[in-house]
Length: 485
Image (cartoon, rainbow, N blue to C red; front, side):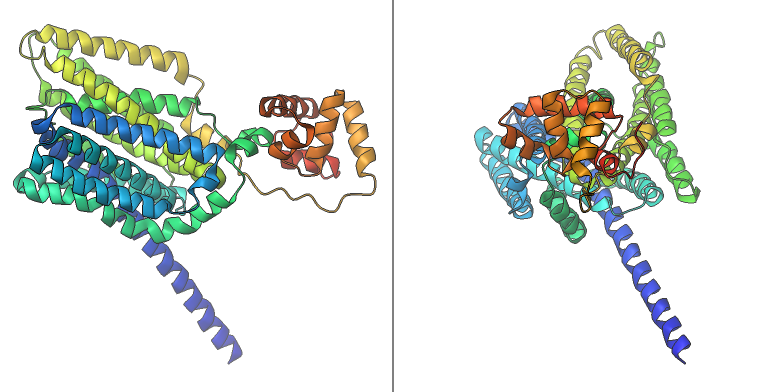
């Protein structure tokens, strides 16, 4: 009887876990569809309406969104405590105020009102996308790849319907979708955000755990700029009245890839996806170089396929990196999206500039396309040979909380022995002793009254001399749990 009850309880618990996981997957999938859809509504519906008042509105609002992400990344890295209060309410306020001011600016034909409203709305949209990334951190890598690939395909398919809707309906969707996005994922993101914002600042933690924190100039972020440039160029290439064309045939490769992800038992391979994205993008740029033809639809379909696969790759890599090191998640997601935004702005403006020659000198388009291909090949040969998205994700070490146990009786003796054996200087020995006690970089800075960069330099030298890579490894070495290199 007792065995039957226990089995029943276990089965009930298992069903509850499976139900919660299914709910998480459904919520994340729905939120991702809405995020991808919102960016298309922004370019297809909102920006063309803004142009009727002033073409500068789209540039100002896009720049405001990117700048807000940069600021938030800097705050999240150095002063995350500033974000503990009213983060969600701030995003909701930005979305509401932005929608109201945007509609007022359009109705009043007021450039100032519209520019402010569009900028505030874009900031809210950008931050809502970051919250979706946080919520997706709870998915395992295989499920994450499936959700992102299927969501991007679904959002791309939804674009077919927008031209048949009244412009008012599209504008209403543009205003409402971010609220729906937050409603789907806020309950999933809040616990993770609390964990992120309760930890030490990533800037301090990176001093003693450098392998866990990507620098702002890491190759991942540079690659996002380069290939989001292609996305921006694709949006404006051969556009009509500053409205992007819809390459319908790109649904085929996107759908095939989504199906592959659905049936595959392996997690998404970011490097294989990157290669596929590169090949399709380069093929798209080469099409205009075919003498005497204006195959803009062929080029756009190839480019949209390539950039679509890279969008899937980008979201997967950013979320996977965030999940490996939760305290740094907000930095990775905001900075990654900021670099993607920067690349999009540059690419969109170059594409718009190229369009001026589209009907006048098509040879100029071919020349621009050839130069972009040449630049991409140089970039790949120069930087990508020894770089791997997959290796980058695997090499990020989880920033586990320090666990210094009760000090061994010979603690000071072991510290002195290690210091002498590995040739630490007097200042390095002093900092080493504090690190061995579990002190962080900020404490050491204040204790010894030295600059932050000085602490960072000394810690780097200490790690190199001791042959450790993390603060926890250093503590384990002192406690005898790790052998001396």
